[in-house]
Image (cartoon, rainbow, N blue to C red; front, side):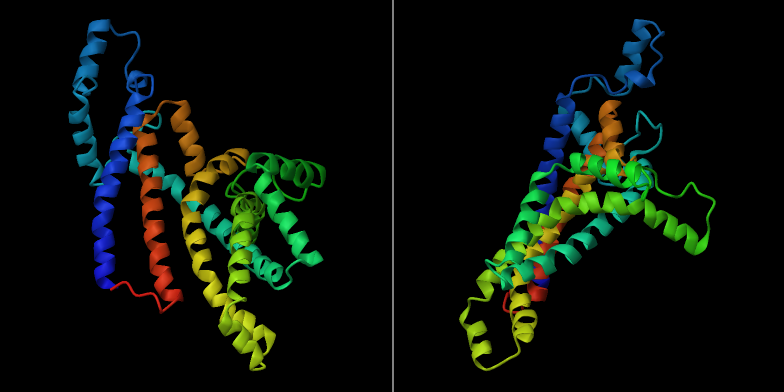
Length: 319
């Protein structure tokens, strides 16, 4: 396992390097001058051009990429042109909110999707199986922004059960009351973000369980007279979780990127809304920093999935 980890970590270097080239090239291809907001538009044109030259705007593309990459290796992605602060600090200020929302959405997905997938598989072709399948297809079909707006209309406006937006940190509460107040603000965005992946994980769990419970060793366990719950939850579920682990691990970047719409709908101050601000304000340093962060999360999520394989199934050897 140690050799495998070292080998995979070494492979990540050219992968992230390739991603950085693509991100830099795409952002450079975007229209507009990222430095235009930093220079007083009333200054003479000669001085304007001189400042752009000092900022390195007219340097050759490879020189600008090498300079940006060198800084990025020390987590220095430059200054945000919109916020007037280092990109790392701007992202770090929003990241805890996104991690909190994404983490709760992940827990919601696992708690809801895995049991429903198991129940659907163990009751194949029953009314319960059809009901769960219909729920899955509804979850896969409804866009997140539409579902979020429906939740706001009925649960916030019509019934007044949940707040429309915000984080809950603006209230003068302390202790348990403050915690409950924040949880109250998190419920709707967590359900909306979690629903994006709940249907997929549930379908994967159902398919994997159906495949496992038809194996010979499951039939043998049943033939020996083992309790059905022991057969399903002790012998079948563990092996059925191997492909599901991959899906769940790969959901991590999906939750972060999916948070763009959810955070915008509920005015949640996370990385998603920060990315929207960066695009609207042509804040290219901030946009490149966020994109590289998401790319890194995706790469390491794949590595995490492979490691979890060995943890769940000892038969898998990487040496």
